[in-house]
Image (cartoon, rainbow, N blue to C red; front, top):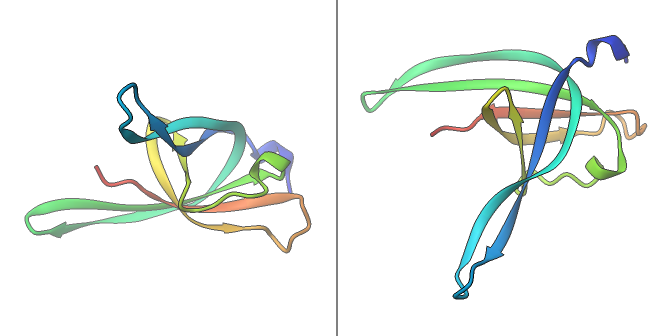
Amino acid sequence: MNIALINVKITIQKNETVVDDIGNHKNNWTDYHTCFATISGEGGSKKSVAGLIVDDSDISFTVRYCKALADLDITKYRVLFEGYLYNIVSVDHMNYKKKCLKLKCEKVRR
């Protein structure tokens, strides 16, 4: 892995359940880990669905391995990059050599 290519900052957010003053449960995204990554596989397409233009962008982030990211779960984490949110579709541990992780993501529809 070429370290010079790891040059963009991303933030990994975690979904947590928060209880307010009167006992209501609410999902809240909090910043979990900030690190640098390499971006690859930027692509996507725009298509028209029911009169709306839908952006299906997919992107992959490669980050260095650390203990904080070892137990990433695709249902509880997402990536924030340049103000855009990306859902994690899969986590590739790159042959379990504990050198890097590849996060395959897709843009969150809003």
